[in-house]
Structures are given as structure tokens and as C-alpha cells.
Length: 312
Image (cartoon, rainbow, N blue to C red; front, side, top):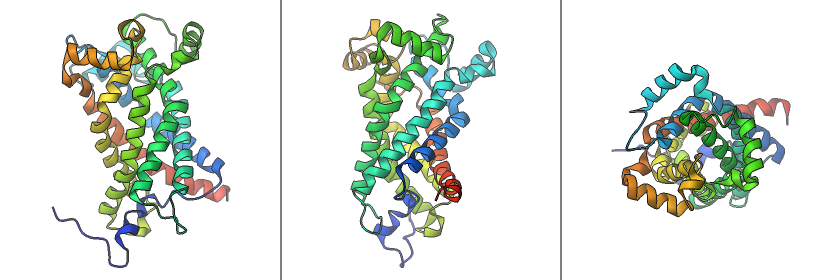
């Protein structure tokens, strides 16, 4: 298909950078606050999709409880009320704030190493910055938060009643397994997040350039940034879905009894359920990622503009 080139006044290199123009050098604390506010707001809006995605991944493929995401949604509301869709959400909302805080803080600081005097960055530099941001957020926030969320959801699905909520799960996991209990499935999580951000940051740039036709006046427009972010989120799903599925299994309630480690988990999943098991929950995750990443790229510059008015 024919894709319009950027206007002559904007060279190709500049056009490839315009979408991330809202990421600028600023006080580190400001990036932290923007990231935290962005993450919390995003999860409140999209958590039901996250919940359904996790349930679809945790169920047995040979004897599934839910045929699709819609059925998962209906059965959850019927059996647990609308609040069931937000089971484990408190730690996710708080954790997402920290996740975005670490992501944008790391991305901003790492990307500054690759930017020239005009603040421009190459595609390779942007990819490396995204990769580094993904590793940082996985280690500092995503792994423990995902472990708690997954185990609380798995506990409700099994009806075992081990946890009253996220806070109770944290206390019991730390008491019975120590701090390492919160880092079950760390390897696939790090791989997933590193790949996610390494792919999403450059993809968002390219998609933004395509839909804005290289118009720099739209660089802080939440609609354009949000649409480009949603497209980048969906694109990254299919590169990271296998890691996400292994991660969910490794963080389930019975994982310690079923698997010796990440590789053993992946091998057993493949041997018992086939290659398609690594793409379980792809549809809800695609929708979730479109919403999450789109909201992230839309909210981050908006929150930044609001903060700029009160924090110069």
C-alpha cells in the first residue's frame, strides 16, 4: 500500500523521532510522578481485560472452564459479582504506578545517553532504551506484582480460599516462601518485558509518523499518540505471548509442585498441550494491550502537560 512521505521540510530521521518528542530531559522526580499517575489511571480503566486474559491462560486447555473471553466475563460476574473482575486489582493498580514509574524513569535516563544535542535519537538507540526500560520494570515492579495478581486470581478460580485479597497474599507468600516467592517466573517476565518495550517504543514512533504524516504539531496530541500506542501494543503481543503464557503458569498456585523451573514448565506445556498453548489468551491480551499501551501513550503527555503548569 502507498504510504505518504513526510513533508519535504521534515527529513526522514526527524520524522522517525517526532512521536517521542514528549519525552524530554527533565527532573528525574517529575518522570517518576508522571509514570506513577499514568500507570494507576491506566489499570483502573483496563483491569477487567487483564483479569480475563489471566483466567484464559490459567485454565486447562484439555478441560477449559471458559470457551472465550466473553464467557469468562459473564461467569465471573454471575459467580462473584462485578467486583470479581477486579480481584487482585488493588496491588495491580499500585504496582502499575510503580511499573510505569520505573519504565519511563529508566527509558528517559537511558535514552538521554543516545540523544544528540537536539534531543534526537536513532531507532537502534530507541530500541536499546526500550529494552533497558523493560528489564528495569520487570525486576523492580512487574514480577512481584504479576505473581501476586496471578496467585490471587488462581486461588479464586480453584475455589481454594487461601487468600482474602492482595494484601493477605503478600503476607502469606512472604511468610511461607520468603521474598523469592514473589519472584517466581522472573525469567520469562524479564524476557517478556524487555521484548515488549524494545518493540513498542520504535513501533509507536513509526506508527505515529504514518498517521500524523510527520506533522510535529501533533507530537503531544493524546489521540494520535494513543492510536499509535494501541497499534504498537497489538504488534508486540505476538512476539511476547509465549513468554507471557509460561509466566502465568509459573506464577500459578500449584507451579512449585508442577514445574522444576521455567524451561521445564515450557517443555511440559508443549508436550501436554501442543504449540497453541503458548498463544492462549492472545485475543484478550491483544485487546488489553491495545487499551493499556494506547492509554499509556495518551495519558503520559497529558499528565506531563498538567504537571508542567504546577511544576516547572
